Amino acid sequence: MDAPSAEAAYVFTHALLQRACYELMLPSERAELHRRALDYLHAYRLGAPDELAAHALAGQAGAPPAVAAQLKAMRRDFLRQGVEQATASYANERALSLLDELLVCGDLPPLDRAELLRRKAELLNRAGRMEDAVTEAERALACARELRSESEQAKALLMLACCCMDTAHNARTPQLLDAAIASFKQLNDTAMLEQAYSALSRALFTAGRTEEALPPAQEALLLAESLADETRIARCRLLTMNVLAQLSRNDEALAFARELAPVLNNNPNPGIRCMVAAGLASLSHGLNRLEECAEYHALASKEAAAAGLQTEIARAEVNLGGTALQLRRFHEGLRHVETAEIMARELGNVRVLWFALRNRYEIYDAVGDFRSALQAATSAARVAEAASMAWHFLVSSAQAAAAFLELGQAEDALEWVDAALKAPRAGQFLNFVLAKLHAQRACALCRNGRLDAARESLVEMERFLGLAGSEPAADSQRWIQEARSLLSA
Image 1 (cartoon, rainbow, N blue to C red):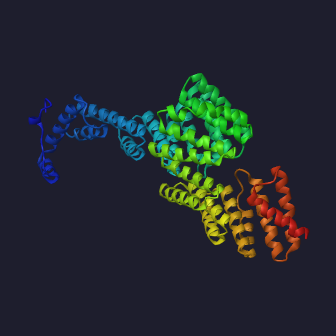
Image 2 (image 1 turned 90 degrees about the horizontal axis):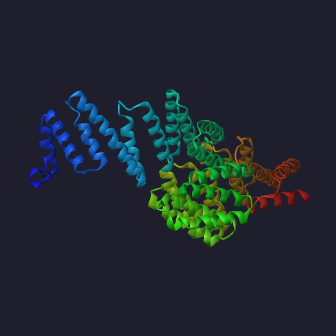
Image 3 (image 1 turned 90 degrees about the vertical axis):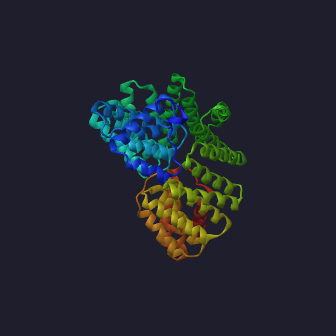
């Protein structure tokens, strides 16, 4: 094996014969052959990193201490190369497997362990295994604290906040990000500070605190522009655009959209293209350009598939289902929702699963199939309750109550409303949901002839509408109007 020649190669015609020959060798002889194979493959740049890592591990048996130490270091390097290659090609499961191999290396430096745990949390989050991602991010933070490294602690705080954002732990996110931002400012780390401000804006935006989300989005964009990083700039422009659109500052949002459109054709990263397509879809939806919105969601799904981002495919399918509902393409909507639900269950992604079930309810409600709508709503409520998703539980409870009222089962509706009103309260647009629940309670009580109690619920309904500052969407408006008309009559 000193030179690359056919005569030097061992050829086995059957895997069992190969295995038998291998096991007949002495352990020291096998290790020596692994070392020689490693030298050959490495010298001629042959073999994948994980194959080279396997030779480096097997070659350690019986090797002198200095050689064994060198092989251990080489194995760590090969595994790292494998992680980088797998991550770049969006082979998330392979990258996670190689990371696990790296993390069990007994001589792994603590600083490397903290970094690798962060990488693992990031990959788990990207793959849709978000609860596992939170666990690994907690481990990364504990490791960073043991190191007493301000930089590592700040990076771990940021990673933990990002992993918490889409889980039942989302209430922790703003506090974690505030701590990370303070640390990055002290460390004068512009790149990480931009990431932290972006994450804070996303967290506030998804919590319905849109006015508060704009300043950190603008700060992140300024930092990205100071770094002259086109990918960061595109991401920050997208975030700022979505916040502006939510604030009805449409002219400003459309100006950002025009700057982002070329990214879909020019950026080589399918993950970035997916993100931009999803953002432009959101803007189109807000402007009531539903056909355009559907096209962008379909493009986001295609780019997510190219990047191996299974969670993003599922999210795109949920959004395609919702858009099809608004276009009154009900069968098409159900097809997308069913795909999203199956994927979300396979991924263990409770947020995507809840949104898929919510869209399923809305489609069945729109076509008048209230029994199927009830089944979807109760399933969504169970998912939300199990995951401690407080706002989502209230929404699904209100949908279940609506289905019971449509079916003429006022007592069952009342039971769901009362359970929801006693549940923990947290999340976005809470006043609208509480107004709807009290409206449904008033309707149920009125149908049962309990007018005094119904009037009390009507007062509560009006109170929460006053706190919300406006009337809610059409699905809630129906019950509000019915409650008002029943009691006025």
